[in-house]
Image 1 (tube, helix red, strand yellow):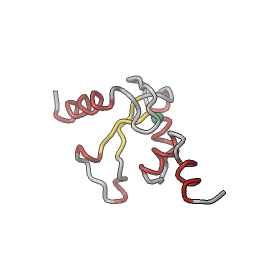
Image 2: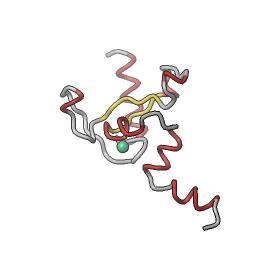
Image 3: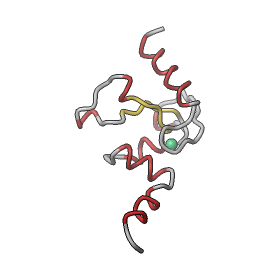
Image 4: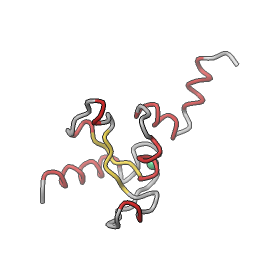
Length: 97
Ligand SMILES: [Zn+2]
């Protein structure tokens, strides 16, 4: 077993098999990406490699395919709040509606 796969198993255990953003349960799929279900497990770089994010353990999490695709260029913390429905609380906490 390669170190890469071992790391992935460790991360999966740490996250309890749940998506790091929406906390939904994920499934392992060996199908090609375009055939995978929305809750297929994908490897996610918290800080985009384009933004200088590195391939180390602290920067890697497992996210469902749907979140991974939907996040786009959004900051990962911002996206986590958005997926968990906390964003409106954050905003309404800052503004006096
Ligand atoms: Zn998700």
